[in-house]
Length: 343
Ligand SMILES: [Zn+2]
Image (cartoon, rainbow, N blue to C red; front, side, top):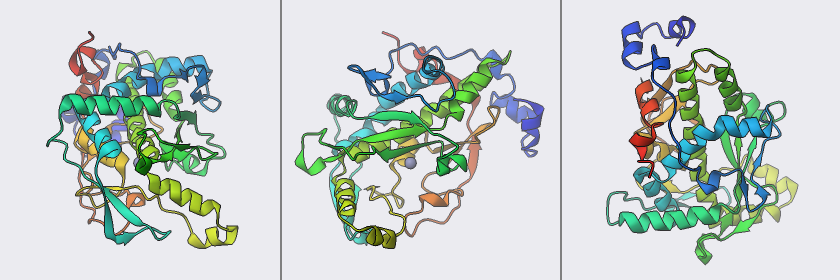
């Protein structure tokens, strides 16, 4: 980490940066993750190209090469115990209607039951999640944002985002009539690719690459929770169908449409990507974009720091403190022997 970046945080002393591994990060060693990328994230599926690299800023080949270690990390997150527990709640959790919370289109908000440590046989949960993810593989798409036209990405409001595919594709990955949903597409900020390319042109780059890999992986993992929810959330499907039958005037009168994403039991904010992060990392991860050298932060979820856009109803007071994520942690999760033995 250079002095210019450090100076932006005058209250953090050099010895604290040292302790957190940000000062000698190049001596840490690169990612050693070597397992195959999960098929859900692979670049093509049975001849169908899943990744549209048109706006990545680099060739498709180079984009794949740079993102590979990050995608291996997402794959490790997905099938780690907290990954399985969270996906299991989204795919198979019992859904209960919240009587006093109505969506804009008059439906009822739902809540998923969530007991990650109770009554779930780890092997059965793993098998069930694996099956659902394999089916999801047929419909997921990835692309990079065109930052000149995509307002949300131009203003830096998002690093990745999940939206329904353009021609709303109805899917039924659980083969359960109550869980019909839609296929979706993850849009990724091309600055992740640019940051990795920039880091590769530096002499001492290990720390930078580790931190970009980690933040790219956490963002992609976050979006996968939304993809999973949209795939089995019949409320979104019926909402979209309802909207298709409306006149333009009726639609405009509704204003910006809130997502009827379900609440996870016990949470006051419906944001499954964030609750997935909470379970995986013990908080929500935040990284200042545009500066590869920037430190990575973590704060409590759902007691918020300043992310008002996630407020979907009366929520908690924003009282969270943020903490620095140690560079050693980001390195450790990128060591194959640490996350899961390579056999
Ligand atoms: Zn989200």
